Image 1: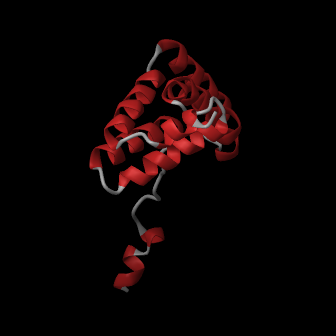
Image 2 (image 1 turned 30 degrees about the horizontal axis):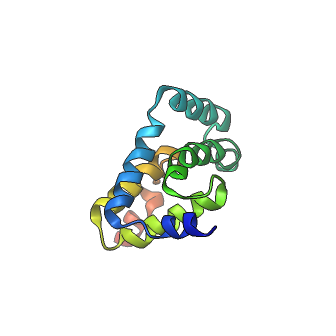
Length: 126
């Protein structure tokens, strides 16, 4: 029956906020925090290993929450949820903020090169 996927696709912005908050909260549950820490330790800040170890655990944690809202309990359900959230980000700053917090839970922080001669700042002055 297609009602579950139609229901999932019909989440309002307010409902999406609730689900996002629940997903973020799920990451701080003790058992999930341990799972994520172990996955990060295995990944050693290597992007390829992050995809191999961290992303699957993060996906499982999200699946456990979003299945209650009609999303399928597989990678496709997580992708549909991500697309739904993305569709609301531009029109709702709170959803954009929650989405950013969620991504920060499983994506490594981006490190910028330190300022200095290599950044081009002093080259432009010469």
